[in-house]
Length: 110
Image 1: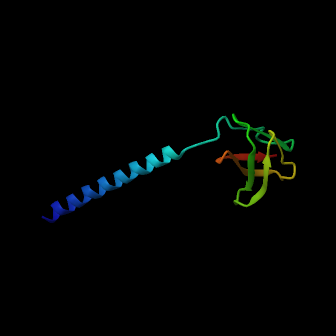
Image 2: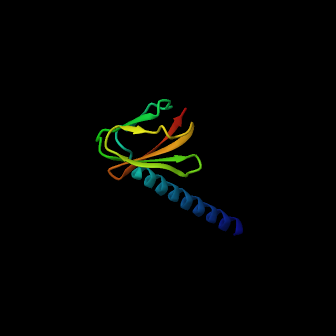
Image 3: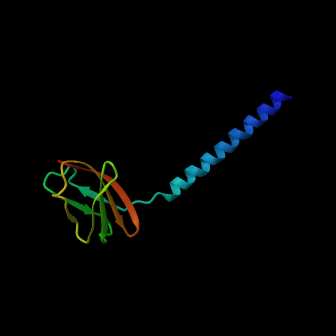
């Protein structure tokens, strides 16, 4: 009797965990949105300017973070060009927000 109870309990737990996994995957896939045709170039940067383009070319909020997550620079651009000449050489994370949709990219400054 104990073996049957243990087997039954194990089957129930497996089914429950599998159904939870399926629901989580579905939420992740449905929530995925990205800025259409987003391009950040040149990367790595050596001249102090980067160009950010997208299909809509709407105004963009640009946030640049260091690898520790500290916000280094925040700016809103209406053109394609962003001056980053004040950034020291290193690796940064750039967060681009356009029409309430955000995307992040790795940015390397030489």
